[in-house]
Amino acid sequence: MEPIIQIQHLHQEFDQKVILEDINIDIMPGEIISIIGPSGSGKSTLLRSINLLNRPTGGTIYFKGEDIIANTKHHALIRSKISMVFQSFHLFPHYNVLHNCTLGPRKVLKMPKKEAEQIALANLALVGMQEKAHAAVATLSGGQKQRVAIARSLCMNPDVILFDEPTSALDPEMVGEVLASIQGLKSTGKTLVIVTHEMAFAKEVSTRVIFMDNGYIVEEGTPDKVFNHPKEERTKAFLSRFHTMPDEEPRE
Image (cartoon, rainbow, N blue to C red):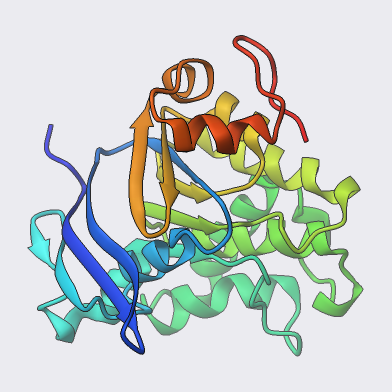
C-alpha cells in the first residue's frame, strides 16, 4: 500500500524564524495520527502546510503521488480532498446548519441541491446533529458548532481530514461530545490527522502518535510506545505534565 500523503524535508519559516525543520512523514490510508507537543512547536503550521493554507518554504508534499506544492492549479480541488476542521469552527453565521453543509458540495463539486442536502443530512446524523439541520448557527453551542464543522467537512467526501485542536475553543463540558464525534469517524475509513492537547483521547483513538517540539519531530510510534515507553527525554518531560504512567489514562 502506498502512502496517501508523503511529506519530505518540509521546511517553513516566517520572518526568518524557523517554524518547521526537515519534517518527514508518510501517512497511510486509513491511519489516525495524533500530533502532540507544546504550544508553538509547529503542529498547526504543519497542518496548514498540508492543506496548502501556508506555502512551505522548502520541501515537498505528495498527495496520491502528486506534488501538490508545485501544482498550483489544483489547490482548490486538493483542499476538497484534504479537508480541515479548525478550532474556531469557521461556519458561516448568516446561513443555517444545512446550508453550511451543502454550500461546498454545490459550489466546488457542482452537486445538485437535492443530492447535497441528502448527503448533508446523513453526515449531520453521523455526528448527532440532524435535528439541528435548519437551526441558525447563532443558536448552537460551541460543541454543536464544531460537530457541524465536522459534518460539513465530511460532505466534501475528503480522503483526509485534518483537525487543528478541535476542542481548544470549547468549554470543558463540550469537549467530550466533539471527541466522541471524531472517534465515530473511525468507521468511515477516512484518514485523520489530529493536532490535540487531549492526551487520553490521543492514546485511545490513534494508530500513531507524533510528538513535536521546536519545529522538529522528536518521537513517533504507536500510542503504547509514545505514551508508555517514550525514548526521548523531551517526550518524557512533556508527558510528565499529564502525570502519565504506563497503562494509565493520561490526565492533567
